[in-house]
Image (cartoon, rainbow, N blue to C red):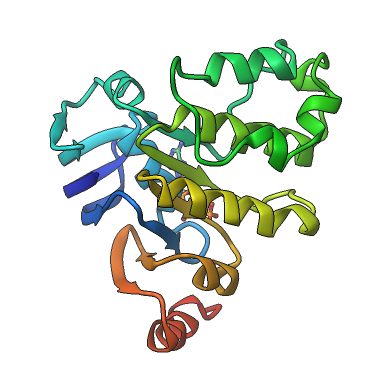
Amino acid sequence: MLTLNGLSGGYGQANVVHGVDISVAAGEVVALLGRNGTGKTTLLRTVFGLADRQGGEVVFDGRTVPPGRPDLLARWGASLMPEDRGVFPSLTVTENLRLATRKGFVPAADPRELFPLLTERAGQPAGTLSGGQKQQLGVARSILAGRRMVVIDELTQGLQPSLVSGALAALAAVAAGGAAVIVVDQHAGLMLDWCHRAIVMEAGRVVLDAPTGPETRQRLDELLMVR
Ligand SMILES: Nc1ncnc2c1ncn2[C@@H]1O[C@H](COP(=O)(O)OP(=O)(O)OP(=O)(O)O)[C@@H](O)[C@H]1O
């Protein structure tokens, strides 16, 4: 579904992500992990055109996404929930959800069932929600918009524990429905429990790309050790 060939990116003169080669298939849930500042967010931002692409290729669903045309990703069914959650603060919860909704597409998991708050606070401007509430709205928007691929930066950030496993189960259902799912999160152990594969970054490069399992868990412990 998504293939990155030698993707480099960053901000102006600053090169943060160096020659990343990865591939994520339909039906897969992939965890993108790494210590703080290793370039996970910048990688996703480069894919979606929010950081500067400095080299390499993005291929989605067999079609090349030229630099400067991130709109094509959205049109072809990919969504990103950025770290700041990407909600429209002056619009209500319902309006935010409506804008993310794609005509004729019913996601494999119903975000309103997942997060009852979205119904309870339907008429409230998104800007007045708490951080954790905005997180629910952001994840919901991403699921609604990601017909072919859902990418979430910091999934569990601010989510109350009682909602976390529901959100992960929803993403698993989305993948089982045929989409690709990529999740960045600080909770590596939890991600290993739920994801099919772990991709680990260090200093802007991929240093591990392996199916989740006991060996990966041990290698990950070493890689994520605080230095
Ligand atoms: N707008 C920017 N301009 C210049 N450098 C930036 C910018 N945003 C991030 N960086 C740098 O890029 C590097 C990677 O940051 P990035 O946010 O991609 O890492 P991350 O792996 O997502 O970290 P975290 O887990 O802390 O969110 C850091 O050294 C950071 O200082």
